[in-house]
Image (cartoon, rainbow, N blue to C red; front, side, top):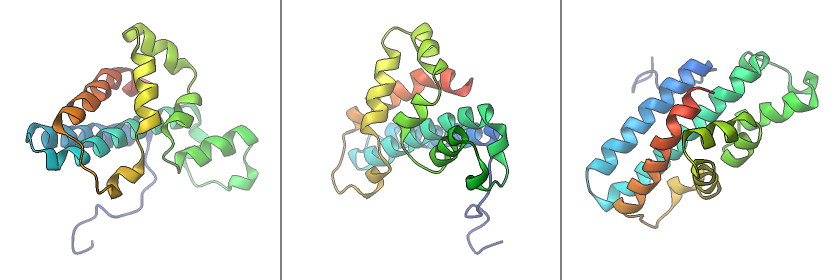
Length: 157
């Protein structure tokens, strides 16, 4: 174990482990936004988007269980290679495209929810963690509102 614990270990996560991580990061995001401090808004938005990323990756792994263990990407089919690439990327919109049943499930949940997730996916980026700009708590609450609305559908992928 390292000086700061085992959280830095590189692990291959199962879909259920990814869902647990997503739930925890969303809880962290909510905690930050509930502080009411604009200085915590960026972290809240970043963590909320990361939760969405983890849920999407869990859904991809459910459909491509062969990618849950060590594989040689060169030996994968073209479609599996694309999913494998997505599992190591942060492109939410590409992951959404790889889960075609998601759109219908979102619309069953609430009209317009698919469009809201698409907007969130188009705007969120891992680069938020480097941004010197500061979002507002109001923006963070709106962002987390969408994340909370899509959560039940994403968790059940």
